[in-house]
Image 1: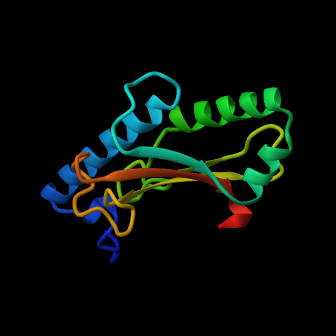
Image 2 (image 1 turned 90 degrees about the vertical axis):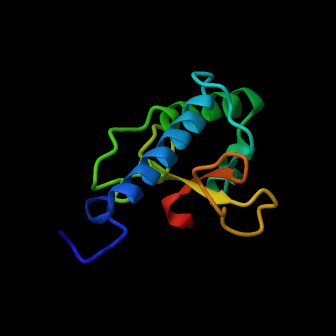
Image 3 (image 1 turned 45 degrees about the vertical axis):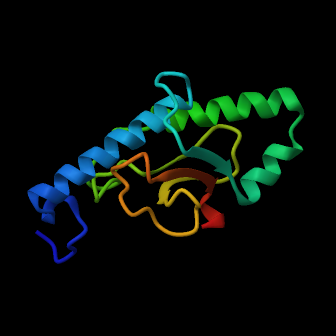
Length: 140
């Protein structure tokens, strides 16, 4: 055990159950990006920083294909292990993608429905707006 209380190995059974529910909701959101699950309410994806600018510089067909490739990689990302998912929520990943000039990272954050503060309960889709942010590691 480590002294980090946020690591999955240090969570109580109740906290592990909460993390598992959040992970399930995140998996559904990610799979909805490629049509493998119904899109949950209050979920958005956005591409940020240099990656966004690069995408805009592509012709429309290339841009569409790049977005499809990105969403596919994020939707099927895995395996999630302690080294890349220490809190058990399956809310972050990174990968190298052909044609990209840096490592791509993605993160799911949980906001209230107005997107002004953190969600009061990320296990409840009725009060949580999930936002998937995709960016180059250099923009972090």
